[in-house]
Image (tube, rainbow, N blue to C red; front, top):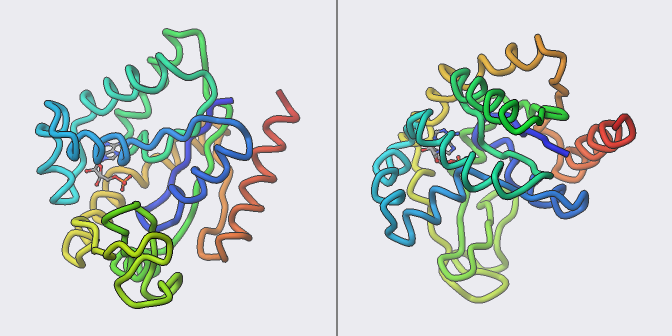
Length: 217
Ligand code: AMP
């Protein structure tokens, strides 16, 4: 099964994608995670994309599509694409890359959230600098402020979670990614989940959608 998860930063689609991928035995393929890992490793790819990530800007369509082709489509047959495509040209490149491989998407799930909620969620995010576990100062606070419940590591603000960068990311989303809602809706592939609900409710809704897709295959 081949799925795309769409939605603004902060909608929780990464967290949902990780859990749902596990439940349905799919590969969770996050372009944000791929790029962050590349930056951390200091690879050529990492050096090329670092300034885009630090400034909340989108990496170029061609480079991002190439990375997805090589690291996801060439390796996996069942996956959730989380964070790709993010522009109309990327969606067209994805269609072409799948067609070249004799494949197609099975569905697109859109996690909807308004910008105000997205800002609150994103700026409150904290991540453990040791084990990578995510927290939120309001919605998922650690037992002890600034300290990871699991490993005792320090909780830090991800470099793209400051208010100005968050606003930049949302602007990029509104201008470049939002048009994908119509793109996939016109193709009849879009299913919407209200991402402002609790994580469990959101997951249950998404699970229902994926099960329906599985049943119709
Ligand atoms: P994310 O974790 O999905 O919010 O992605 C973090 C950052 O990685 C984004 O702000 C972009 O700089 C970059 N990125 C991730 N996915 C894409 C994409 N599909 N196209 C362009 N840039 C991307």
